[in-house]
Image 1 (tube, rainbow, N blue to C red):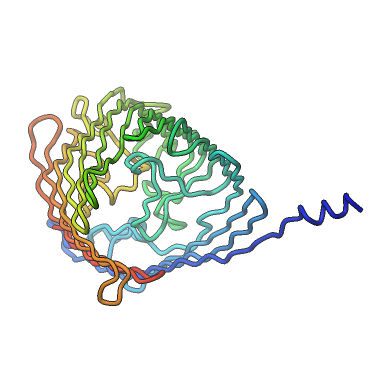
Image 2 (cartoon, one colour):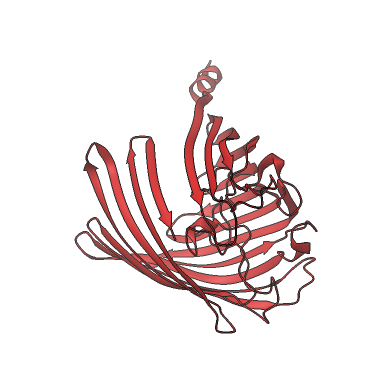
Length: 373
């Protein structure tokens, strides 16, 4: 009887939670040198389910993207007279993962999953695009924000934003032995971490293996309160990237980042300088970040998804203001961003970019309007 009672008391239910995410987007792009203006009206839906029992969970999620208006080059449809908006129609399995979440920050995840490391400069999910970038991988995480932590991943396939119609230079998936490792230590003033990103773009159609690289680096990020409702944030990072695996190029280039931000009430300001260094000026011998969430970096117009042969120096600043519980919304925010782009070598000025955005959300519903020139 004791055994029966104990077994009954310890029995755990399987909890099932439905998942749904939907996003409608209109994006327009005009680009010098191309005859047509791109107009993309798309609807992305991600239905899924998560089942949890104790420390174990199973998650399955689909992804469907419908091009309602498709006067644009989606990267797979051959409409090269139009500017690129990389949101092709799609219907595929986005995530399918088994996860164990233990004590003391221990977690193990296996299967098709979302991976976002640090600020997503080198490894991210490309969340701005309608089709998400996910990874077929096994991932081990241990540790908490303070003290020691480690995040180790082996991935054998990167599921790109090009979806099921992807082919050639923009395939649905890119195979290879990807090793992604971040080891850090959290302190009251910030977290110092070392990282190694061994990216194996092992598909000859993808730039002839020239995007395969190894990047080893250090990063420090933290924040400090200066007064009531006033906070200083700061980030510094350095890395060294070189060829790896079957990359035919022989190169090495440095990455640098310095950024500081100040927030006071609803007002926020950020300034920074990022360098994606170059080697000798040949194509794909500058720092490349093929797994990054690119929309977060180097301007919203997306001109530097591939780093130019002579590298990139990005001096940037932003100013924003946010309101909470106003005009019937939970939050409203406005932000302006400025970028000044130069090469890392050969003294070239690429141009400047101005970006403006308005965002608002209420409950589970959010919206935004963005402009970049």
